[in-house]
Image (cartoon, rainbow, N blue to C red; front, top):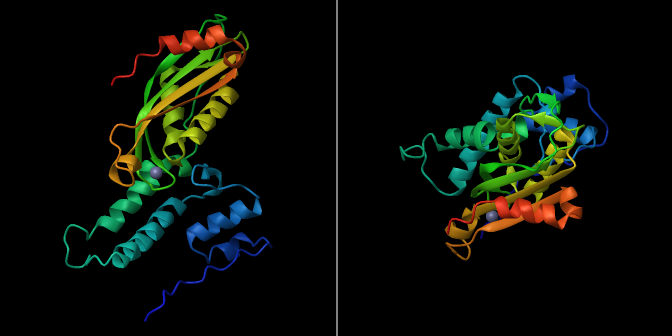
Length: 249
Ligand SMILES: [Zn+2]
C-alpha cells in the first residue's frame, strides 16, 4: 500500500511582504503575492502582465520547466533515455509562457486610436479573424474564427483593421472558455473604440471534443455577444448576421 504524498502548499498569509522578502520566493509565488495583495483576480484567462517585473518571465519559464519535468516523471516516462522527451519539459514551458498563453503574461499590444474625423456611422465588419486558443478545462487547442461588427458614432475612436486581430489574439492566447473569451474581447473593444454598437460572433472547434471525451468530430461551437445598438435594433443585428459568410460545412 502506498499513499500519495503531496507537498503541502502554504496558505497565503494576509500581511503584505516587502519586495526584499518576496525576492526569496520563486517568481510564481512572488507574482501571486502581488496579485493577492492588490486583491486582483488571476484566473486562467486574466492578464497579469502588470504584476510581472523584468526578468521574471524567464524565471517563470524555468519553474514551469521544472514542474513539467515532474509531470513527465509522474507519467513514468524515462526522459533520461527517451531522446524524444528529453527536451519536452523545456519545450512545453516555452510554449505555455511565451507562445500559446502569452496573452496572460504580455501587456496589451500598442494600439493607436484615431478620432472619427470622417464621422463614419455605417456598420463595419472585420473578419474572419483566426482564433487560436486553448480550453481552460483540458488545455486542448481551440481553433476558430471571429467576426466583429462595429457601428461607430462621431465620438468613437477608430483603430486600424489589423489591430482588431492583434487584440483578439491577445485575449485568445490564454486558457479560455469561449463564452468568456468573446465577452472579454467585447469589453476591450468597447473600452477602446466606444462605438454605438458592437457585435461579435465566434465559431470554434474544441479539440477536447475530438481527442478525448465523446470524440465527436463534427461539433463546432458558435456564440455571440451583442452590445449597444445591436441589442436594441433587430434590423442591425440581422444585417450583421446576413453579411457573415455562410458556414463552410
Ligand atoms: Zn476542454
